[in-house]
Length: 343
Image (cartoon, rainbow, N blue to C red; front, side, top):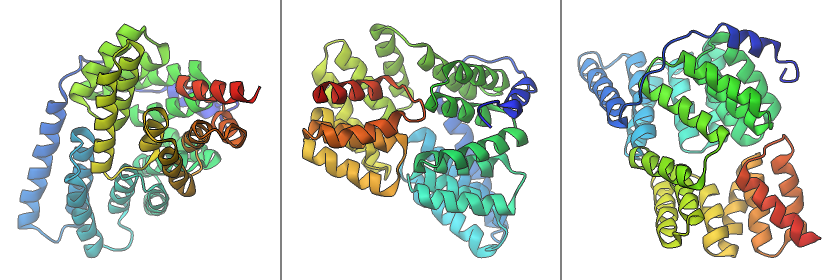
């Protein structure tokens, strides 16, 4: 599929064009989601036997957790989705999508895959259902399966959600020009300031920045979206400009944030490998590898083994990390150090 990409090319050509708008604070999106949650709660007080409304409420709390990084939204989402499935246990595609999105958010990717596949069976023409499967299979290291689900998602709905996933897929395969094209189409399709800002950020990530530009970008980003990933990147930017103590504070905060969100041990493994206990880094990496064998966990395993002076064992994992063509600067830094130690 991705060698000739005829269907992707067609999808890019028919993308809806909308003028990107200036980014607005994340609080705007949070307020909109919160109002939606309150409206659904009011509706459910009057009609508590509405499985669709419960599913919508659950999905809204998953999204609120994503934009606010408040883990309290996860149990709220789970309660709402559980109630939806109690009322309609079979063929409840919207609730399956919500459960899949929740499992992806909690980094339970095997469960997310299963819920996503149930959603696809119930709603075969749902791009959202395919998106759940794409995300789960990518993290589980099933590249072929993720490719099929992504193509189906593009066929069903060529918009921001599918184009940004296509860009990520291309980036993992080292096809950066195609990733930029997909992000350009995503930006053209963006119908909200938040979506447009996200697309612009991803485009800037591919273009690269000076150390000072990177520092400014991540400082602004973590002030609005303090995700563990962004905190780690901000820490790296601080390290590059000679501010190790400030960087360490960001790494510590990233670990606390990841734990509060019930995230995986991938972030912890990479931070411990560079700034903590090598043995602990390897324990974290092995725990993640037992759950999913993706390029991301392969890189974490390779680096954890290397810092434990086991570079010969690290090399096969490093090979797997770049096997698809992924050329992330940190991954390449890890690989160069491993290869250098074996010469």
